[in-house]
Image 1 (cartoon, one colour):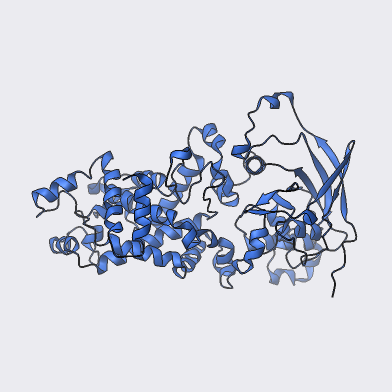
Image 2: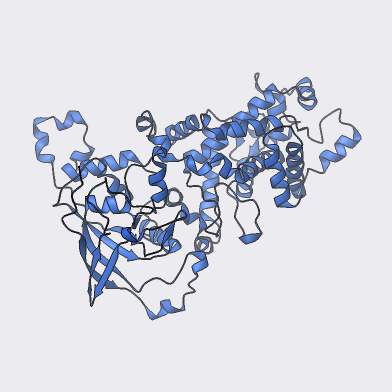
Length: 523
């Protein structure tokens, strides 16, 4: 049966002029996705069903890869519980939306139902003709046309548009949401009808970096949400150098590294659970006398690897959790639980591979023993003579996992592992209520993904590398000299080179990735 045309194929709009002479001195740079914007935007109202359909905002999952390819919106995590509360609020108002079912059935509860107004504007960007998103160009029949006349305008819906979620563009949706996605998600499976419109502030052909800037301005400047969370909600913010210049350091990198270290220390799934010196205490002052790397050293290592700053075109290998200024470089929209899950899984995989290895270095460390360790601890992994319990070893391990995953991103389809896909699983809707639960959910998903198989192969190769420190008893003089080269600041680079060379020579599928990294780094 044919889908009926929308009863209204346009939205009347008021043109809002906002421009100052001082803004003309701003350096606008198209290469940095900061083209000079229009000197005005539009204020209008659009039916919820139309706005949701034209922006392509509906429940995403990996089952709809074609839909994802058409989607111009920044890929942000969908907190379904949040959208559900908004939907309940729209239907019944506050406090009904937050009341449990038992209280709603109480006789006196009926008068607690109120109107659920959404007076705050949804911020959108209208794509111009020939615009491209994710490598696809918007079709002519799917373009939204804006006709201006004095202080008013008509925003014409695409010629191909038919009302409702059934409509789909040929290649790219004509509008993208800058802020307000969760409000639109609230209408998933819920059509409020013709009498429910949403206020909209519409920009026309606003470049991507300005969209990220606008999101930050709306959500962070008034201190509405946690700054670190903003980088998950809007991953493009990781590329914005003005944020670093404003604070004098990277807000995202420093804060995120601290959070990831805390996750590695606190999670019982992590091999480093209670094994990170969070306060920088001397071993003699700590309750546990086992060797530990300090929190500060962990943060420095993460900032040098996974959350590495991409410094222009000279950076050959980027950080998986960071971002380049180049719009064509990899940008993974993984949120904090997903990032922590990857690190935890890599650590568990390393621990398992080291435990299984019977390499000479590991056998010797086990024979030497380590009285400070817990009864079931493996001296090859946690002992005082193992590099894996030192700052140098942690940096080397993190470097290799990041390097090899980075150069294998396309092959492993890293961008295909998304929070939407994880959360869309039936069990996920009850399991992700807290940070730890979300982390465990991501970890469970990762274990079933081919990314984990790749990591397992890497750690298998790493387990055969000689991880003994220079102070290990029984080393030959030649071995000791080689190990001394791994100390100090120059030791980070040397260990990274040795680990890559070691893996490149292994008869493993990951050898090609290691060879590629060696070539990229010029080692």
